[in-house]
Amino acid sequence: MVRWEPGTRERLQAAALELFAERGFEETTAADIAAAVGLSERTFFRHFADKREVLFDGQSRLVDAFLAGLADAPDGTPALDLVAAALRSGADFFPDDRRAWARLRRTVIAQNPALLERERHKMAELAGTLRAALLARGVPEPGATLAAEAGSTVFGVAFGQWIQEDEHRSLAEIESTVLDELRSLSSASQRATT
Image (cartoon, rainbow, N blue to C red; front, side, top):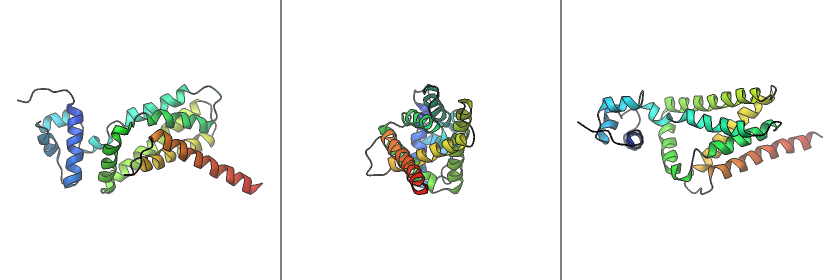
């Protein structure tokens, strides 16, 4: 019988990602993942509801990080600055040592339409949660929705850049650049209409 070892969840995640990349997501079973780290399939299911959850584990912690940044911003902070605070806090969830894992995860997800749909759903949930938090902070509609959707988009664009092979900037740096680009588009649009 295999004895409990610390880091079981992380070992299962690492093995799963490696197997998904080698064999494909559909071709890899929960039993394969468990066996790769010397555990039983039953142990796998103690940690994850199914093999998809290996790739999407941590969503609630990421959302909590975004919300913490938003909550820490001073009262009266404009909506887009609240989103910037949420983005900075969320970036802490992705230290540079997670970049290779995130890159491989993105490759696995991109090869499976059902996983891509799950990823889109995850981003929509993030935007919805940000919207609710902005409304609770007194940001009126449609500003709350626009700011939340913009924040989700900035995160997605920045994350895509962060996992590029030749990228070395932190996620927070990239998010700041992408958000500045969004602001400049809005400013340019205002100048063009006046």
